Amino acid sequence: MKQAATQKIYIIDNEPEICWMVKNVLSEKGFDVHTAFSGERGLEMAESVQPDLILLDLQLPDIEGLEMLQRIKERFNKLPVIILSAVDAVNVAVRAMKMGAYDYLSKPLNVNKLCVTLGNALKTSRLINEVDNLKRQITDQASSPLVWSCPQMQKVMGIVNNIAPYDVAVLIRGESGTGKELIAQHIHSHSSRSGRPMISVDCGALPETLVESELFGYERGAFTGANKDKPGRFESAQGGTLFLDEIGNLPLNTQVKLLRVLEERRFQRLGSRREIDIDVRLITAVNTDLETAMQTGMFREDLFHRLNEFAVYMPPLRKRSEEIDLLAGHFLDLFNRQFNRSIKGFSPEALWLMRRYSWPGNVRELINVIKRAAVLTAGDTIESACFPPEILEQTAEKEESITTVYSEPRRVIQPLRKVCQEATRKIEHEAISRALEQTRWNKVKTARLLKINYKTLFNKIKELGI
Ligand SMILES: Nc1ncnc2c1ncn2[C@@H]1O[C@H](COP(=O)(O)OP(=O)(O)OP(=O)(O)O)[C@@H](O)[C@H]1O
Ligand SMILES: [Mg+2]
Image (cartoon, rainbow, N blue to C red; front, side, top):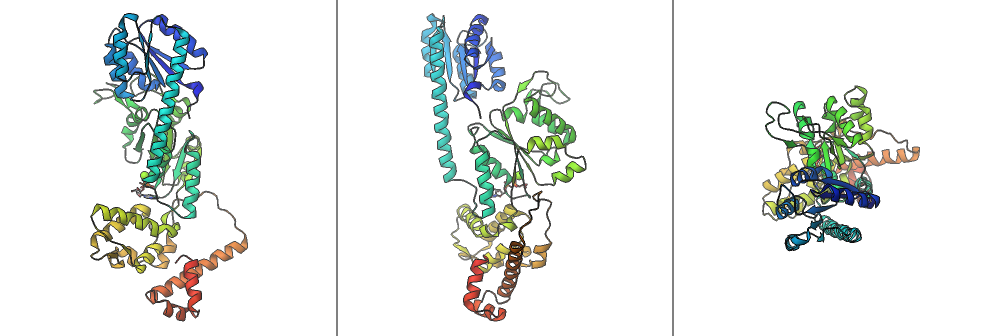
């Protein structure tokens, strides 16, 4: 998070003495001060400086004052701009305020007045940002695309909400389709960077030759075909978050470069020597086994530790069967709206099949199944007949045989009593589920088959979440 002490002030003024004087005064007060002596240079550097406030002289040699202000406002809509104007240009300064400048100061500058105006402008800007963030959080919560209820996801959300406001690198791990990108968006929208963009790059989808130019951008002439300057994703994400998906696919050369950039907090576009400071929070995701990749030399250990300041593990959907009903209902609502249908829900058998299916494609697969069923269902309830064969033909053996490349690295040793309880629970779950399947959910017949009374069966079904 940005601290008040490191707030950046950007002076754009063609008089070096003024820049020098203001820089001295403000640096002493703990501001990080940057200067530019022309309009073009001022605009060129603004993206990499990412200032918190601009002091803008209206009499620049190359760009007319109000046009300059308009170009700044187009790029940094919310940034406070204080106009520095010669006494005979007060009319123009007033017009500048109508265009969104915060205030104007006449030259020669009164240092006390400069400090007071600057302090007020920064305070107002901070309050506006806070209000915007709060408004966004309220709408986010009301229309959050994330749905969860099970204890595993509650744990994940607890961690995620705790770390979201802090500028720490987060590595999100989990199988494909478990919601890694959605979690990255949640972290970004609950951070102080939410007013700036989150830029996503799928490292797995980019050919090796393109990765670096995508990430770091290039200058005209850097390579054949580079006929104009192009900013990379790091620059587009300035002030915000860069989400690197499938980080395990990053070529080794690029891993070295990425590590250096993260350590130095600056980089150069390909073909350029100009250093650009970065102010980007990095979130990465991976659905492969990075530990093996490190052992085989395919992933750098130093980079892993740099990215893994906080790890978040997304549980696979088969371990979240308690929340299948909720998720299925959520997506059914979505497709009811999308297809203008009014399907009310699922038959008990359909729900049961969904809860025990192994969902190798996780939430993404569930979405497809519900979409398909919403299209095929004629009545107002989704029946199991609308499900694809892999769900109808699943067997307990298949469920057991699912292995995964994703696993939490540490195995926790449990007390023996707990291990036995869990094993019993699993066996009971399996036996009751099979019997229910056989009797097509006739509970009287199931109780008879299992030689237990109806009440016990009823309680077990509830307790085991069948
Ligand atoms: N808890 C959730 N609530 C609502 N929608 C979800 C949830 N989890 C995932 N989704 C949806 O499931 C789909 C897959 O999620 P996402 O793309 O975030 O997964 P991923 O882990 O990044 O997958 P991949 O590894 O294939 O990139 C998206 O449409 C996402 O909106
Ligand atoms: Mg993804």
